[in-house]
Length: 376
Image (cartoon, rainbow, N blue to C red; front, side, top):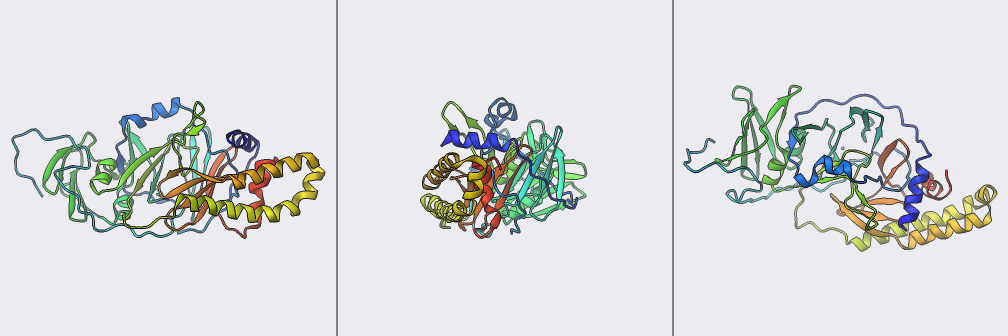
């Protein structure tokens, strides 16, 4: 199965999908800094083997839902969230609704162009990393300063049902959520969490007229998880080490927080759903295209390709997870939302990668088979 997908991706490298004309309309946002773990250093990622998902899919624009502490005599500890001195008592969680993975990344020599689900675009430098909050791409410029990745604060905190306030006179940012309050002052590594003072190794600062804060500290203090993915493939074991939602980038910064009492669909159900959808598609495809394909490739080739497609449908399985999605391998790569069951396709060609919502009645779904097995 792995050889088939690597072969499929090699075929995609010869293809090119024209990008749709879209309006350049991205507003700058307040931003915050991501504190990455040493094990996730970009230098390590660049020295590894970064392999886009070996799959091709329909390239479309999905319309989807984008206090001052008392003086202390003991040394101030370095922040390493979550902090035991402030027991979490999280009572509010983001509402589970449809995520919005309907976007595209196009890479050139020194830049990355992102097309968002609303049709707007933005161009970032080659080191761009995508920020996802609860499975949706945040429209922002992601920076890296002193080995820390910078991402937007208001999008993050408000997406986690928190609030943000700014005091211009004191240059202080105050974040509130579920009885927890984080106070940070521009240029200072002294941070107060419910009056308890700690130190961070990255002070909040202002870049390009926008405020940046350490995301790992903020996210984990508020009970959210933070992950960094590079979609790295390890040929020694024949598996991906991790999975990215949007591939072909330096990485994805993934922040998630969900109510633990929410139910999710079983992974086996996700795999069965993909197998069912692909089987229905193939039943329509095989007769509609057979004569044309036989004329182009010969009967023996078509029969063999059809057999491979059927094997991939029967063998559809969950091969990993990222954020709120199961990663399912069938005749191509699919993302299945654990909460809603919504299906998305993820793919790549020679110059771009994308994620798009899957619609069962889309007549262009034939491309899932044509590009994967018939050089089209």
